[in-house]
Amino acid sequence: MKKAYGKFFFTWLLLAVLLTGCGEGNREGNGKENTTDTESEASQIVFECQDMDGNSVSASIFSESKLTMVNVWATYCNPCLSEMPGLGELAGEYEPEEFRIIGIISDVPEGADTALIDYAAKLIELTDADYTHLLLNQSIYDALLTDVTAVPTTFFVNENGEVVDTVIGAMEKTVWEEKINALLEDS
Image: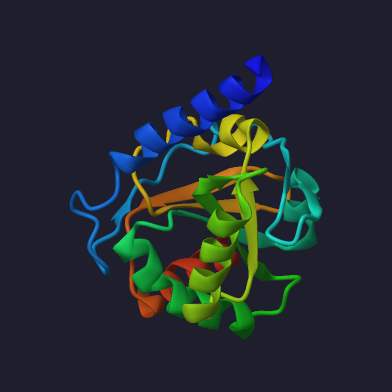
């Protein structure tokens, strides 16, 4: 009973933190870039979690591509859902060794009830966001989401598992494409 209460409390605490972010100035095409000094973020990301299919995923996934876009989204977030069709298109336009997209569903934790996971799966299907989506757990929260105050938030991670750029807010596909190409050229 104590363990179930702790899991329930953790889930609601994360939801409360993340719910305060969506909708405050995050309109599609108005993403705010937050490029930070890569020296301060040069520590490697370490996590282990599950994807939507129950497969185990770790930070080693970053070594499979030169650049990985990690898009943190929520099922209640209209700007998130609005940009996902474009992200789905982008996911198919690059060679996987060069670039890939991963989604983190910030309001669907591992072990959530089937209805919530099915709802997220339906949103992914409706938006044609055909790329890997990860379920929230403490490990991925600690690795990437401790400073996330709004969704969508997007991290770009290099093949060494280092965050090289962060964008807060949704953007159009063409703007994402320009950002991706510039980051690939710089790496």
